[in-house]
Image (cartoon, rainbow, N blue to C red; front, side):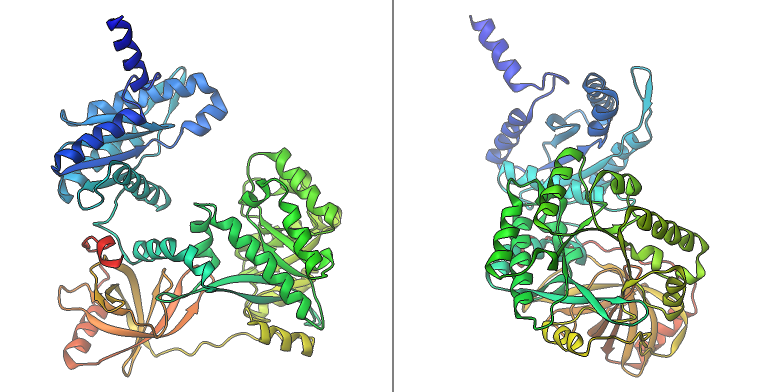
Length: 561
């Protein structure tokens, strides 16, 4: 009986496929380490292939994949490492000691070689896509579940970054990571505090300039980070169920606004495909339309074709339920996904919104021209409408008119407008295409690669890593630069620019922000000019750019709570 009990206990604590400790067992091991109060280090490592291997080759081969990857992983680990299975092909490595950054990075580099290892599974040679996250006790958490969660968060961050295989939970956070952390923390309260609002970007007849509709775009005015676009907060909301509440709020606000408009045009809203997986989701839309006395044809649902999920039957039924209500559906960002044309055949949508990547500089790209002409022909054959997004230049507009594009949505006609501004535009009835002129500073002789970081946040000193920028111009007490992160204008954040010369940083105040089509932001900022600083900038202009090294940062979680 004792032997049977021991066998039952062993089976209950081990993963049946790899024979290593399961999630409950490895979590228990981490818990015991926290009770000892001695520093230790966690590595969360994912091979990132199990789902597609199961789907393509079957679960038996997927089990063989897990065994092969774990066996190879064990060969690379230190002798004192403990290994446990978290889920899928994600494992937790426990080192019962504190590892400093150089040692963590060295082991991470060693484990990263698994990405180039050829795993022989049955008759197939398969490769992994390694991503690694690291958390450390006690600075990254004091509870076992918290430490494991933080290691997995860092691992997911590494998976989303191009070229990154390892991320430390806090010690290498840069401005982007700080911003992400704060947005995720503050989002639910922001909905309750009514910090979200809507902007409306007109859809315009390409020839007459008549406003034929609009797209409602969610914005969030964060008390620290200023105006936040949905491209930043929607992916965060989708990590929890909060995106359901945001979508319900969006439907309510658009219907409320439509009711107030004396001259109504159809308004489209962006809805995640995940929203359609709710039971009776259409009842929310139907009830909201009825309460505000809005015909269903005035509310269009846009679904990004890159977000469509695998369950074709459920998505088909969801589209049919919307169509039964009389709500038109548009494929947003069309052309970016792998199955664009297949979606046209499978789902009953009424409109194609051609992604801005094809419209931007279409006049100079023969390939983009061919794609747009082909999509226009397909849409005509299927009896679908077409909207071209992201049109900014007059030459592009003229080319699209030549192709027979009827509806344009882009900066050349209008940027997103506030409610009152959109009402005025509707009253006028038409918009005139105008190429925007952006006031610029005199060009420097050479771009300067530098970094930007935050030194104070809400009247508290902080130490976070730097984000790379490129300084392109400077004038009298003014400097202009490019960056990939959206920074607030005239905010309480204390920002400094670090030059790649090893000398002291200099403070700036962002005064103007321009969002560019390629995902970058152009900034103009004020700074205090000194003879010494101008000499440093001039010297860097004459050098060959070396690139800016991201600096380490201290733990910011305790400093920003």
